[in-house]
Length: 413
Image 1 (cartoon, one colour):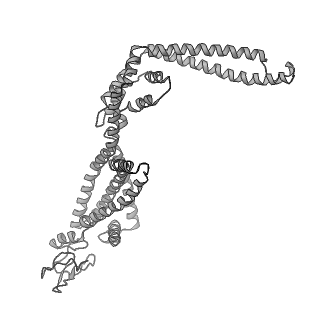
Image 2 (cartoon, helix red, strand yellow):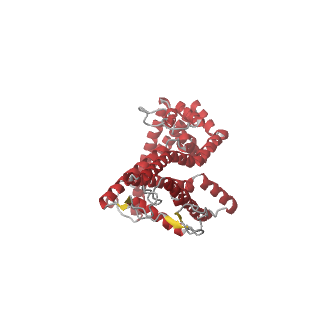
Image 3 (cartoon, one colour):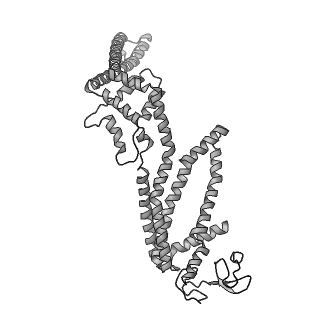
């Protein structure tokens, strides 16, 4: 296996740095590298764009996160807080919630959940000037409450200091505080009364807001377990399949480019177009790099990872680090399979040699040679090998001797 890897790397670097088996000069090599970088950036940009073509789970189920947070909360004001989210402060030129959800479909494949659109419709019905004014009034009173509480904290700090001065027998004229203990106590009581009144008013306003028919309908919809389970199930399924869909679209973007580059490379090699062969080879490598990267990304977050995660969780409970052991085992196997594929189909010398002998070309560099040439005049490669059975010269890399028909597999290893 290691010998094959070394041979594969040797072929790779030879193809990447030579034109017609002649090394590139430094300037040409720099130009090729700059072109490679430019194309690679554009390939990754295209992959990123096409990966967003299908609507994401968050956009397909835009109500899921907000709805889940509401159901997870245990605070007594959670109904008011969810209704308040339906009443944004700035409504100038703002789309309705339903239209805003539907915007995610523009330019993308897939649809927004109908349940989430219904969720948005309830929010749109709540959102009107009357309820916005109630929210504005509540917020203003909250600001007043905060100011009174801040004033109380300041007064309390001075009040404690004044009491200490009084206990120590220090005269009023020597005090560092501007307010006496008696006045501080009166101010605290007055502020507390104001705070209590404002909180009662806010409590009344919140109940008034929640008592509106639109709010009642919305809260009832939020508490419907069947509706939420439908959204939750859809979101989980979309999240599970989304990485696979992204990989499919990214492959759809890359595979035609790989096929074209490979076809051009084979054609250029057959015709002896050295520069075109070199450039198409670099393009082929550049198109394969992101494909391999995306496949490995998918193995970490896609359906296969989820499948392994579920198996490990079911069998070993919390020992999820075992997934890493599986990947340590699987990745070399996948790498070995890729090497075998390239060795047998892309860089297979025997497959290439058969075609080249038929066209009277060098079995190594594919340049045109005469039928009886023993060495290639272009690359110096020896075209023949001795048959182990009849000892006549037969073509290198071809599976059978052209004289006696004996298999050459053992003699060409």
